[in-house]
Length: 269
Image (cartoon, rainbow, N blue to C red; front, side, top):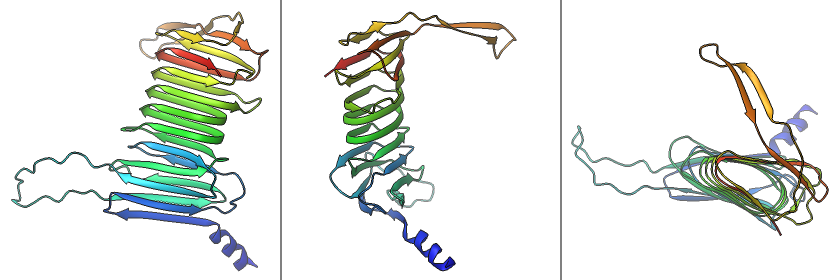
């Protein structure tokens, strides 16, 4: 009986490692439950990520090693020819419809991934790449440090943040009674929602302006006051924050928008 239990767990796990010198590698990952929804998790240090929902029952991962410009080789201390390291290494793991993609910190790999449309996503990159997601019906959690986030034809919910980059999103439908958040330090937030969406909005741009074609019913709100000791010198510090708040179509779950350097644009469609 113990043997059967161990065997059934082992069958449900798919782990694939790619380590070669080619510029591109494609992997088709079968799902444990192909007729059910699933989750894709990918977090990389360097590279772009493109994810597209399709009417399939596998997760298809294409990794492409980004090769820099060739530089004229210079004489080295050994007097020998230098061989460039253009190898690529990443892993894909599947368990119970959760697919995880991981890379080594070295090198830049761009990913183009196809997932079933009913997948949820947890996606992040740090340097040298954008994130582009389209045709997904699920919950999306996406983060980029130095790059743009683009979400197209999304049905579900979104939590998106960048440090240096814009966020452009088009939601066809939203998950009822689900909070969402969009934030950037240096970037524009440009988000399109269905005209009929019900929500309570919370908006703040320190060095930008806010635009919308929704009929926003403003709500008075007291400024948030934070008091405490500053980290240096024991100085007593008071911080006052003002947000714009309001409701559309009678109100609903909270959707927050915050950027420091950039405009906030809310569109209805």
